[in-house]
Figure 1 (cartoon, rainbow, N blue to C red):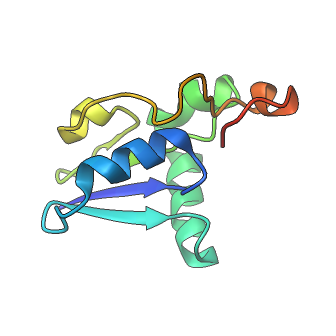
Figure 2: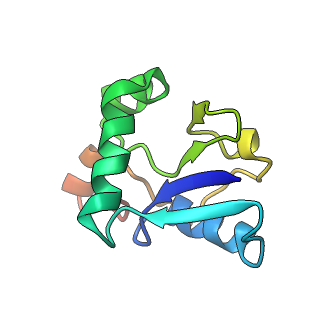
Length: 105
């Protein structure tokens, strides 16, 4: 089973949730905003996995995040067998964009 860390207010996460709907045997979606325990799980990954280096460098949250069945961590939908794309046109998860009033996580 592939574990996905995301947040409902993130447009990329919303697109991923649409793709995995009804596929509970293959995917488990964990909303990092729903409980502090899940947020801590995600932060532990973000603090220790090299997969997040580029995202952190660019001011991105690093969601959606995929923990693949073999234990590898990826930020690429394709690695989880999903299609990459945003649910909201022009949305961004960049902190800089957020400061400028653009939508995103």
